[in-house]
Figure 1 (tube, rainbow, N blue to C red):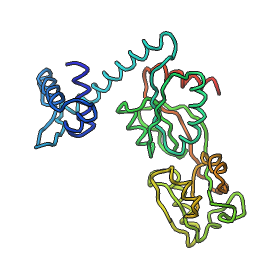
Figure 2: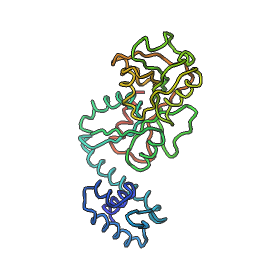
Figure 3: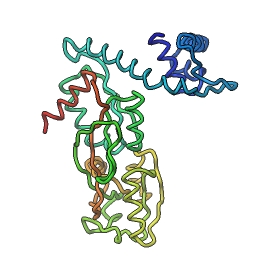
Figure 4: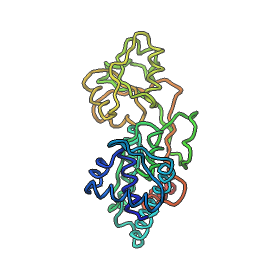
Length: 293
């Protein structure tokens, strides 16, 4: 058993087929199939049930997934640690972030980190919900995560969290005339409004649902999973958006009108990571936050 076999095994697990795994790995399909057969022979167990082109994990296959990910993480960590002996002159830091929090506070955090560590490549991967962030950290697709959740939400299992900030909610309109004059705006003042809302499972959607209940005649004009489309839709006059405070500066710079929303709801934003050793780049990112407190 070697690292290449484990890498190919996990690629098949994540891709769902040998064909797709080979495409993602940029190798020939027979190479992946041969690696799986060799791994199964070395372990003395079948890892997949083969039904036509479909591969379904056996009990032994399920048992191998977590240890295989740990082995590959350990190799990546070892490589990054050696490369950082003379300072962070390269390497990669992968951060999973929910969309609104990638606008703020992540933008400022990355700017401060990049100013000190300009040669570290930073990759921000989109996660729609806290559960998506948890999955990316668990599978090793990201090393750090930025999540926003209700103060009453349960902590993400198996992760360590560093609180960053508390965010309230706001309304975006195409211009001043599109929003009620009061600031903050009470939900009842949005009677008859067309609302642009986020997808189920997000804080934006939770608050928008509450507005809908309190504002007679209001309706969801657009439900959008692509959070980057929210501001263009507002500026096009499609409706009023319910967003977190992280959007304020960007919306104002684009010419949109902004009002605070009169709600007791809020979001607690945290940086999360798996327990254990982190790469030098992730350690430096953590240290930057701690020194800024």
